[in-house]
Image 1 (tube, one colour):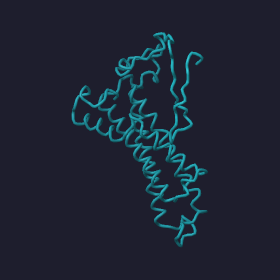
Image 2: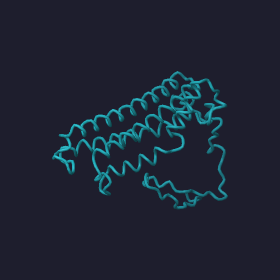
Image 3: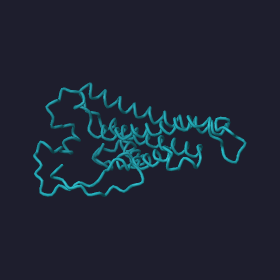
Image 4: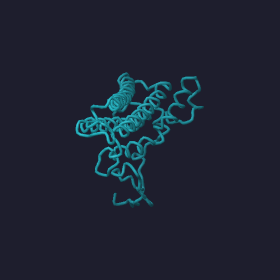
Length: 224
């Protein structure tokens, strides 16, 4: 790190705690064993001596994509748990309801949000299971399976964000108070959920092309 210069460039609405600033390495020698060749990694060719270990046989892009889904599921669950915990102590402003829990509309909103969270979790765990199973067999995932992992991830992101949005609407405008953990989770989810490799619309196109038999070489990205 003493050879690097940190440029403070991370000024964002969400994910502020990651401190993802710009690192400058001016005239720094990087030895070959510190470099990962991405085109080779896409072909499951990794520079490791631990080729018998399952971890080092997992498909490159599916893992890199899926790790971004876990935090989204966690954030959605965090908002859900917070809203449920506070509901018996909160009223619904300008209505007869002294407790949110007494409102059928609120009950329906919480139920729908919970199902969105579980949908996100189920797709995330399915993708993880597919990645692990292929690695256990010592086989690279085929093109269609890798494309589906991208779709699973995009689907999970979409439902996690939907759950958070619905819960915030049900909980009310106080969700955006600076002291509320809900607004922080909302900001973090909406920022992280727009990372280029997990955008639901892009990932659906990747999977759709694979389903329709369009070759890997003709898909919209090599990162599958």
